[in-house]
Image 1 (cartoon, helix red, strand yellow):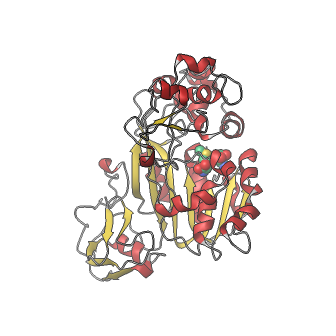
Image 2: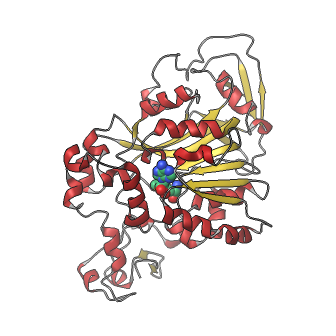
Length: 441
Ligand SMILES: C[S@@+](CC[C@H](N)C(=O)[O-])C[C@H]1O[C@@H](n2cnc3c(N)ncnc32)[C@H](O)[C@@H]1O
């Protein structure tokens, strides 16, 4: 019933069950939508409850189990998780143990999350949508990502998915990368990674590939150097994971190390608009929900710039809507935002957008972006339309996997000053209205 089946009336309106249909109680948030207007891949609704739900004996003979599980996200947190001081929240908070326990035992499916911090905010690209039906349901059921972390044109790449969970994104990428590509996934939560490992052979068969092109590693991301050699990976992705790591700088350094020059770290994560106080950071529910461990966005950019990702670019962002009243009270005035970033490991990138007179033209040819290519939230290239770009953007388009699709003219022989309209002067903090993000915005 409401757990995994929709009820549709003759006009196409959707309901959680036939009782709600009789009561004319449409699915929350979909009151104005007809069945054919709903994207089932992104469909995620809270069940509309009424008195009769508590006496419902549908499905497993329980009292509408699915509704109550979903409703759990809105109900009060247990007493010990509503404490406000670090001492009360648990000063001896063990990050890894807490995260393992949260993702390994406490959550059983996507609907158990208490906020939308770990839910996909971006529209699912067509190529990902086309791949999803090929992925086994068990893999998709425990998807806890917070954005689209699969960039365009990944054919033939060697890819690493950090904190891959059950491997939904990893398998979509394995399909899109083709038989010449290869995807590694790493995760420390045993029950998650075992699901990913279980389907390596079956997924290759579903994709029609002669041999598996994915491998899943059960380990902490801090130990990446034990598994992958420096400069061996074209693309690193990560979906709502870095915030959960205690020593973020160390893991970001590991990512930088495994990337080839010209390689890309394309990922989504949660950021705060200020430094998160200890009582929020040490709350196990807030931490598990990807809020407690969120970095202040400017601090994040400082760290990645110091590691070598000189010009972090924001691709998309969305403020997180916290509906649980207890979590809202604990978070106080902090605004959390889910952000998708693009970081290039690229020789020659400067810490600011400088003008050398470069011009770039998108030639087309990327199947999923036939007419426009979006590099970041400040650059959408229309096919065949010349655009003036800064030196950093010129390098991103001419020295990476995008090189075959752009015609970039200009050199670094003459400098014309800061690239106006999108420049951040060296040493200046990133622009606030860009969400902290990126020199060219
Ligand atoms: C929010 S879930 C996202 C999972 C997956 N990316 C997805 O989209 O479904 C975060 C994942 O990061 C993993 N994780 C957190 N810290 C980790 C660490 N230090 N090493 C390895 N995995 C880690 C957790 O085990 C969990 O599976």
